[in-house]
Image (cartoon, rainbow, N blue to C red; front, side):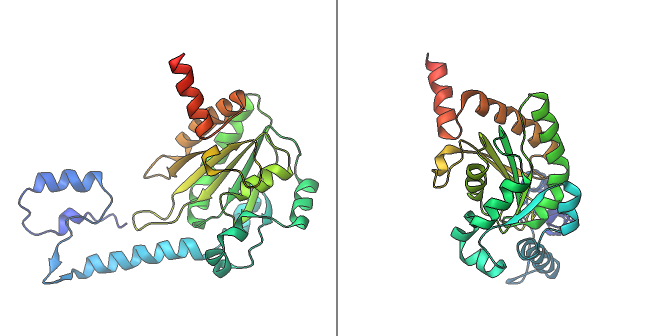
Length: 254
């Protein structure tokens, strides 16, 4: 969303201080006013600009130079193009037999932690957050003496592609950093999904998640620190998702 504050465009608000408190705490388009029965021109133009940014985040690909500079091994799913990606989520969750073989040839097998980066629904989120987040993860996991496999980038990937990759590489734990569906407030929001014992067809409830990772939400450096703690806990307890939280409740009750 534009840096121009909505509160500055509403003529004669009844309670200016209240409006300021609301708009300072909420990224939504509040207090923008109207021109007759229509939105004001600047409000409409900003809306269309932010909508264009969100569309670009979905429809553009992560830059090849970025992937190389980050040191990621690139693979693809069963998806051929963006149109198919949006229409067939199931094919974005799986890799081909040839890709599985390529993974085993170019990546370390049997790691304690396998890191995956996927474009998901926002290439902008990946390029904006991964450069700060990934080094924190790698350094933090090394400090915890957790053996990390070869980081992988997946083009046209959905969340559950982590299960296929983790299963093929026989990883104890798999983490995927993936672009979230962009909104009009931010097109750069990233999520991290984590699973212990990845296997195809595993229930979503077995996955843990940290979301809203971007400079206007949970900063990527802080998210990296939180992820390191969560991964270490998962590896120690050998569980994730709802199993991890149920274990916490049992521990408190006992």
